[in-house]
Length: 199
Figure 1 (cartoon, rainbow, N blue to C red):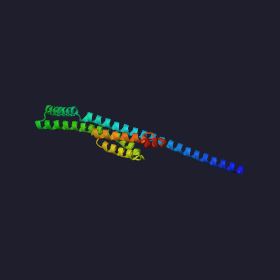
Figure 2: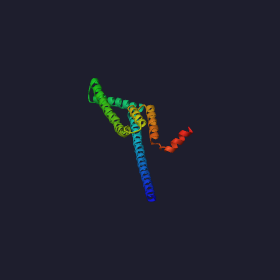
Figure 3: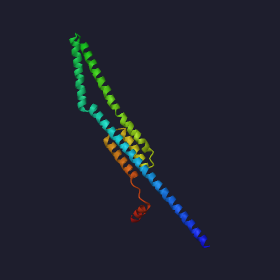
Figure 4: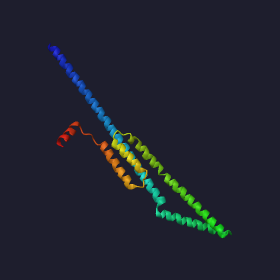
């Protein structure tokens, strides 16, 4: 009888140890997976942030190069000079006033056409950072945290009007807060229970 009790206690203690080992293994695996998910989310959020900053820089460079008052004045001055030079050249070659005017307008139109092509190429340079931002947003849109998904959607919507810096900055702040909340260290069950007791 003693041997039967001893065998039963050995079996029970062995079963308890096996259950405890399985529980600890599962808990450790879950914690590692959670840490890997948090790390991946941080990398994805950093990629999104860099893409947004690149887009802002490209839009600012485009604005500086082609849309500022100094650039518009330069284009106007070059157009006047092209018109005048073309008209003078036609006049020297023996053309009439009408012919000189037409040649001047042709030279001015040619210059404006080249400026427009260069402006469009510069604006197209914004397309690449916009594509990178959309690519960076794709994994964030599949995030398990709904706040991150919503903040990413708001950020993408704000990117459609990159000139509206106030809206873009607000969307970036909301995105940052959502990512920080999603990647914050999780409190243990004991810590959550203690916090609930004190509040």
